[in-house]
Image (cartoon, rainbow, N blue to C red; front, side):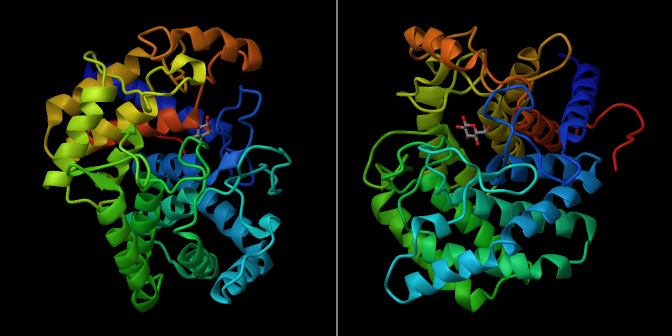
Length: 372
Ligand code: BGC
């Protein structure tokens, strides 16, 4: 695909992102899919990064303001969680923060879907910090919320919880730890978190991953397991907890590329993935491409950019996953389609990762931007 076509799709992606943003600042994961009308800290933090980089900083600020409100509105709960853990006990389950919120700021009312997921809060710290630094913005309005999140992560970081894919809640996931490490380190560097408070968590998390989350020199999906998950690339880029040129990074990438990368581009989540048959995710193609762009492998990065763009519908919308190509478990596609309808399209996080990768490759949107 030509660079001009990419510039157009980047502009379209920014329209999809800003056009679907709620007036209160939250981003629905997908406006058109039955259970994706919530705003996730995970998705939203990457969506805000895309907006921040590519000409819609006001949209990113509105999202970060919304996140700060979600946290400070729940300060009592956070304080109870922190006090209970520091006292050697456990708080009531309902005091833990959810992974997503309704656009008008309520906890979701969906039973049976593990809401306790810590990665989004680390990702938010990383995304907020990057946005403030990029645009020279005043961190003062975020200090209270950041302090609450830092304390919350300091007591919850090593608890088992659902992973990036909202699964396997009894495990401790290496990409979740990566998001927390990346977020806490970014907040400390930016002067938003006390390095003395954050340092021990970073050291302990680093040791834990080295001892239990690394096998044959590469990162593993969760502690004590040997599977590969494409979300592990985030430990390299953007969270930068693993030296991008080091041996662990090389071996992790080699495993992801061997097990999960399709020859023409496109990346599966993990080998046992049955959701819609286990297709290829633009979010992960964007993540892998971003890492390649950051480490100078421009052609490999461009391959992922081209692959993502090829998944767009004729009116420029990107799906959550591509299911018309090779599926890991094809017999599982129909049951999911019967249950929820077609794959979520547009998925704002897919658009975001495309925009970020394009930006990392120096490809910017066409036309005058009318975004806030
Ligand atoms: C994915 C999550 C994502 C959520 C909303 C789930 O199916 O596994 O990673 O945060 O959808 O997009």
